[in-house]
Image (cartoon, rainbow, N blue to C red; front, side, top):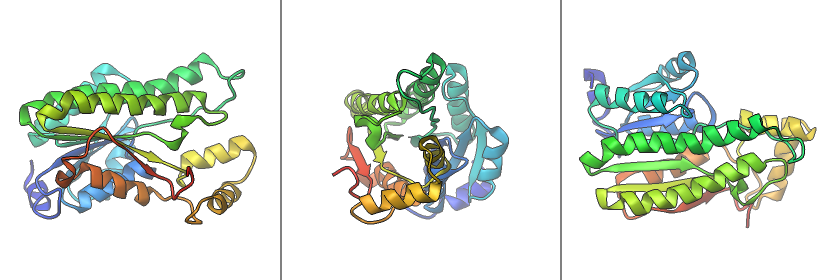
Length: 259
């Protein structure tokens, strides 16, 4: 750990902790990285777009960018190894990397199915498997993975819904297997969040992003759509040391949309 990293880690509830956030160059991933960094963590901003990861990290205190293809076994392991070698530890893993390839079932291609399952579910598996190899000897860890309210089904998203449902089962199994080692595993299930990804969903169904957000806000009990910071707040809670008696849970953050 560099001198500046050590100085930055002297404050906040993540003081002295090291976090790795995948898919962290924008949206929920960047918001989560920013939350953890602001509260004292040294943060590895990880993304398949290495240059963008470096640029994103430069906007945060005590952060650095790394390139990772979460769906590739060697790349996932190398990313975790790089963080552990640089910082001497890895305390928090946020499995956020994701893509969408929406289509109705009869139109969905095998490539669309495979890509979404690979990035979301295979990626969470590979990153978590690599991370626990560092966390188990340290007898401490927090793994937070991104599911979705779409895990229960959503028209035009059979691939995405299946992946996010898989995250739930995967998370609960991690909790059972890793709890004895001081590692918790939880998931956050966002509802509608205003990001580039949901803007693309709006385009798919033939409305503007602004109209899509307005309609969703009207259907949401709190009368607004979510922001990346809303989700980052939940991630920060589950990743904190004081959440050590919470594991195997799915925290829905949707403004009441799915009630």
